Image (cartoon, rainbow, N blue to C red; front, side, top):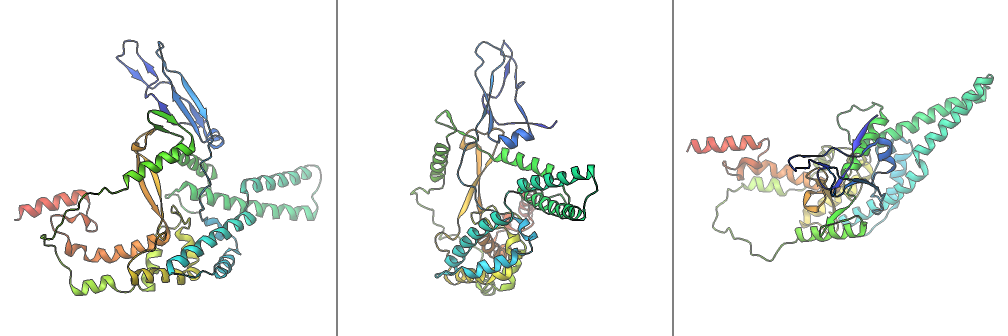
Length: 397
């Protein structure tokens, strides 16, 4: 039976030797995959032990509502033979006036709403559909135990089997995408394994509560407010003066390098940047992954290229065109305070395309402007290589 630990709040240890010379975490709750699926918000609290040598442990189950789940494009949509035509038609029906960034943003937003409804109508609850098909197959098998099946019943069973495998393939694709398993080859069917990985990731990423002013708080509204205030202070710049570096002489690039940096982005280079991005990840606020962008490139490319060309012309991004999510990655096991999380920004596909285009251009001139004693920004230079190059540089002077 596969069991796993769950988040701990309170003390670090559950047992203390009476003389205080030893302590250990002996006691704990372990849960199964089925429990984790049914009650993902399980938390164990280690309470005060008073005069006992063991601390009591309280298991608390609270499936809190943190708000609506963000939209995510699914790879399994492309298994539907009518999906590409639906996207083409839906994209062409959305009409927006304004800048290229506004048009692209609003068209993606409109497409998102249409995709949500399409998914509901064509996919629905896959687990429920699988159960219904299994029940229908079982009914036919029961009839076959008592008599010979009629031709219509045999045909129905074949159709039900085809439907079952189609639904199972869609379900496996969703679980694979949610589990983010990279090393397993496409085509391997192990839904149970993917499901366990999904549960593990949800458990690792879940914030069931925070310590605020020394007290454990689980109310979603209070936790959201604390997170907002904490990072608002972290990301706000104080009114201090920036140092001036007017007298510092930097290495310069040539006119040819400058022309190469500021030239118009070609369609082939934009497409190349898109195809270099990972396919199935969609962590940003827009919810679209690069597999969707690649598969629907013929429909989307005109608006994407207009957005990038406008950025090239005006040199700025309109407000609201590059939003991002802040994900909190635990720095330690069982984090309880915001200082024990590391924030990372999850950007959308459009901003990532633009960033990759700029990075590839800057990469060409970096070796010309970075001092030999500071090669950290040069490609293929690791930390160890940097230290070694600095030593060799100063030895040769």
